[in-house]
Length: 342
Image: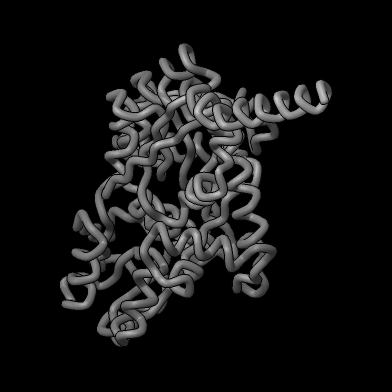
């Protein structure tokens, strides 16, 4: 009887302890915030958040979404958020060069077979003989902003084809909707579009593709970053984030990483993963699937390519000459980065 009472008492005590455990665990979670755009390129974060992998790593993550890539690093520099993830821009490199940012892991990349961004021409330009990148000299080409990743895509593809962009009329229109309106209205001859935007334009019979950026020139499009202060004072926060992020990146890559003849071959858990992204970006799964970028499953950067980007923007005067990528890329959080300059 005594033994039974003790067993029951122990069991009740154990149940009480369990009932307290969730709140205790919640108190132990490190609070963190990240600035991002609600695009498929942030997919590993959405997946890890939905699957509870950040919490398993000891992190309570709050996502703050912005409308423009330029706003994301500013939020990190100002201290409004702890982390950021978005595409590289000339503005990003200038902020980083001033000591405001540290790159810690990879986000998306342009790769062959991943039709992420496309250079397209209007029907009128096509009919006038603009059938390839080499034909863009003297033509009006829409981008979002000067110094953006969209602008950079145009520059590197043009250079590959021997086109001097000084002879191309680059038209910055700030937003994708503005670009679409100008393209369909004939105010420009060509544009650099996200593939999901272009497929909609194409379905309306309004343009033709002449080059897919990833097939032309692979490059490191974006990254995960934080502030030097966060690394110095809250390094475990960054480490915990990257544990969850890399789990998300691995799941993303497993579901979306295979291509055959430029077409996505669904991998394990494809339906679940595409459903998570569809819910976040507010687009149907079939449209999301059109614009899934390459994301390294371990968060490894093409470091040498970042050096190339900085050098390019320096050559155009968009980035200060004293900007040194070595000073703002922290290779200590992720092992096995690619193309690291000696």
